[in-house]
Amino acid sequence: MNITYAMLLVLSSALAHSVWNLFMKKSVHKESFLWLIQTIASVLFMPAFLHDLFTIDWTFQRTGLVLTSFVFQSLYLLLLAKAYKAGDMSQVYPMMRGSAALLIPLLCLVIYGEEFTRFNWIGLGLIVVGLFALSGIFSNRITKQSVITTLLTGTIGISITGYTLTDKSILLFMSPAGLLQIYNLAGFIALGAPALHSKKIKQEWLLNRRLILIGSIIAPSSYLLFLLAMQFAPISHISPIREISIVFGTILASIVLKEKQGAGRIGYSAIILLGIILIGFF
Image (spheres, one colour):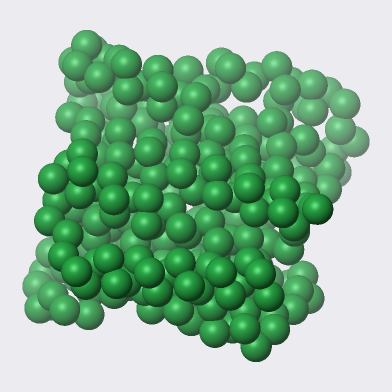
């Protein structure tokens, strides 16, 4: 029952994650759009954070974990905005999620002693290969722009890995809603300077306030659902499964953003789905 519950949470998280990334891709000024979302979310989740802040027995180690998560989350959000300026969603999204999908399970095996079956390893391999193939990294010729995009998305993948593994430890003493506020505050603080310096916050709000308001619910909820799933299943298993968001994202990018998708992308999505099945059901 716990595994089934975790699967439903992760799939819901994946769908929500692809939707709010689509919203951001449609925005005019990425940093301002993200900052507005994180500002509203920070207000919504502040009560849960304050409750944890004053009831938890804080130690040096626990404080260090929270600060580490904050740094990784800040780096992730700052680079995410830059990555979407550098490339299409259907390219950037699979590359950054693909690198995290590979790193998180491997490190979980070492750090937390989680185990993979033979089918799980095959599934992980299919997911990672499918994700990078979907991004077009294997077929595009190498250019300065493609190198920049690869470096950006790779660093984002490392950031995702860093805060995900750190947050698993934080969940031992902090509530999921309280922990989520670290993510919100990271965005509010890290994106504040570039957003305010751009002087495009008012413009972004006037043009996209509906997407911003919806995004302020969907964006934090996507990670909150994943944090809840962490409590019911090994992170090395549910983290790759969450990458079905790539399939959702590719479909949305095709329908909403009119990005061109061919038979190859559909085939790569099927490979990812097969990998998810091998991890989720074996």
